[in-house]
Length: 173
Length: 173
Image (tube, rainbow over all chains, first blue to last red; front, top):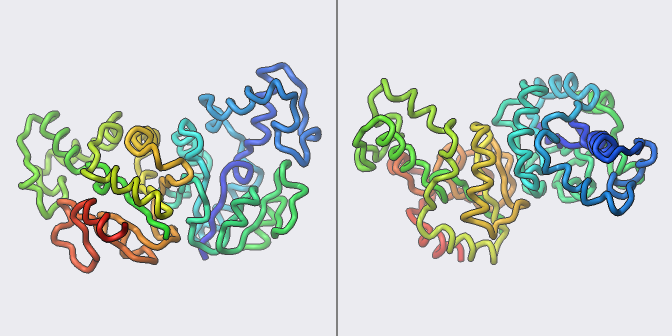
């Protein structure tokens, strides 16, 4: 079985990094709770949105992301049983390419370069399962789409949903 | 129709860059003719092979590659008619990721980030046509594989072959 796994907000905590950087750089006190059901940029004053959009162009943003809990253990077990690929729509942010490769080397060294994909559209992926937080990626995928819960998608319906890597392990191992 | 196009030795002249860097750095006089039917590393003394392998880790190697003749004009026309994706097995060389993105921005700005793929294995690509110089990529692809002639593959058989971008234009436009 071929399984594609998204990076941001599935194995890497991009959402919390947006909040942390925002609070640190603009001296704010935004909480995760205030953002639930929205994108981070929808949860802040309009005059701060340009700053937020530019975070992803900053050196280190993608390199320092926290790992989503239990993703390492479950992905390692999945990798031993199935063909697991990391698939990130990273081409949007050129400075993220090297940082994402380095981040995977640090946190997911058991996923070899042959099984890493930095792309744009995900409908060009041929396989059985896509685990992703974004509805537009899951819709376009020609296979079983599993939506990984992220603060921005808690009100999205229409997809098989998982809220933790433990749950993925129970479904797929 | 979805068309995947490889980078190295299809739109970017990696092969000639290996020879040029080798001649410049080790004061050699290797010619393209001496390499025909072989990889560059098979065409040089064994004591130079480590140097050659390390070229792809050098800053600038992938950034300065020459464009394969007519690839820009034909790809632009293909892009207007079909879904064209650039698909490079770039994950093997981490330092190449940014250089390849910058190179595409310079020479193929009409291919947007959504249509660029840096990957490892190419059998995960879902589409109609793959244009590639490597037999192992074409064999694994689930569609029409077109082998682009490169010095190293002139004796390979078993695939539909093109020797120039003009020929690709005649076939696909």
